[in-house]
Image (cartoon, rainbow, N blue to C red; front, side):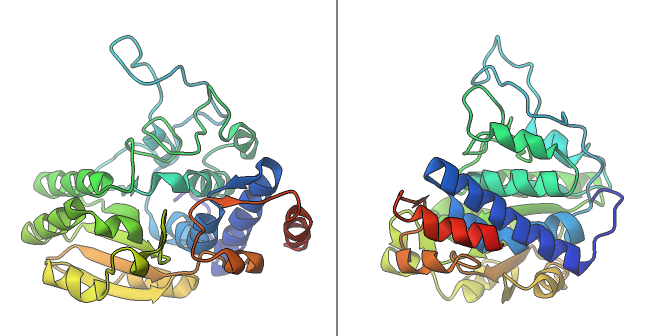
Length: 301
């Protein structure tokens, strides 16, 4: 975290601000990953203000142009991890697996003074680093991500390396519950348990939804806690909209084991009309006819 100390009330205010900002984007553009902001706002606000131990940002204050996909002639770009500070041995590392939560990460970075609020004006604008789907050059992202079990594996490998080097910093990985259907995720958890990576913490937004609708209608995942424990991890569940519960869960005892925090959430929290669209909330579109209803909610936020 930056040097500022945040109260629990500050953290909730940031979560509310995140929802409002992304609702504003959805109204303006006609759609975005709004449900993910509704489900994860408290989780991400709590991580940035109460849980993560990060150094000061070394990223650019304003949004910056991005010339294109990295290649032999295009490697001079700023990594998104710069906004989390230098990877010092005593500082935490934060990986974001669910790359479509990028707008939530950007809003959180702006709220805690790691990037300019005006940088959000470049969100999803071609040629800039504030992309809708986070990649290694996007503020707050360690690597090109995807809810495919890839980032959690990179994060676990980083935790393993840090443990071997005797570094005291922890490694956190934010995930969505949709990617728990990926086999690679469970291979990673199994390896993390085998190597006793108690410096590794997976925080999962369990909102029950994926691209095709409700997770239970595609491939049921429960009992999640039992499954994680069977694979060698410690696992706790909490209300993902309760700041105190999230903080307490992230600090749960897990000596000799990786920790999984299952944050139970709803993708329409704070924006009631979204419940009518459940469970098809992966990418929320707001029609011209719907805009007055959502604008009224935005104005009252």
